[in-house]
Length: 193
Image (cartoon, rainbow, N blue to C red; front, side, top):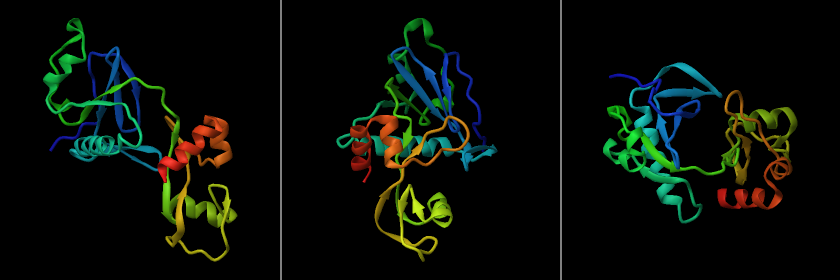
């Protein structure tokens, strides 16, 4: 089974992320989910066959499922590449590679909020590392004696930066407010929880 690590389309590359490649369609973007693996904010040299297909379908499911709570940018999932003709002017059309089917979506161009909204129920990962070092999680003090992977008393909003490369950085609510404005920071927290 082959692995899709790179995409090369005759379209302007808008941005290449750790896992997804985005191409400029004019009024829209085409986002292609590759089989690249991102772990600990790094891209590994190998991939997982069909990972992009699964990732794209999961994303589409959740965008559709949550659109009444939080409007999103999803316009269409590319189940069949012929639908791309609707989003490309005639002179820009080309023979679409078969790999675009089911691993791509067409989205509206929107102003992105450069944060990752993380909700934690357990003391694990980077939250555990921060707690061990300072007794805090996302800048909030917690009592001594908590154990790794212990359930937290209530879900905790722990936003981070959304780094294009390198490591995402944890943000306190104050830092998030400085980045987005306090009203939007609070809305992000409430919608996430």
